[in-house]
Length: 139
Image (cartoon, rainbow, N blue to C red; front, side, top):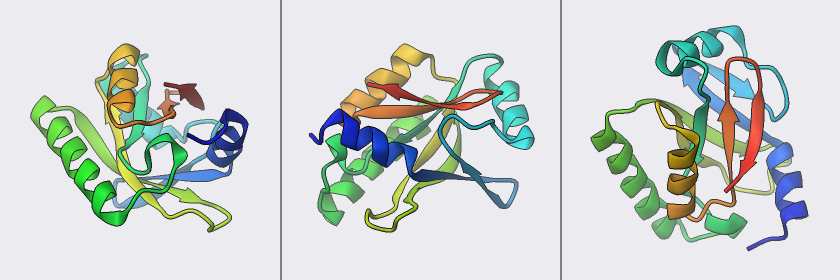
């Protein structure tokens, strides 16, 4: 796993792009949550954050396309079976030196469950999106 400082820098320089109402909403760590997306989160979660979750590149280490797609398929199936409200998302490195990582903005998960899901897929951290701002939560 990459060093936490290096990972923190990478997370902070990422655009978190969520598909909402036929538009791409870009989120950045420690910035306010756009109003429309905040309303979606509140409608599905109340005061509890939604979580940006990906199965790609566990531990911040590049995995093969095949392994990433297999993990993504497993995550998709888990979220579908759980019946959670989800919006498609893509994590994009603003420097362009890291591949895009598809994932989901998931509503209806308590923090403990979100952390457990992140750990199951080897994620060093998750992005919490509440009605007011976007935060990084280490797994």
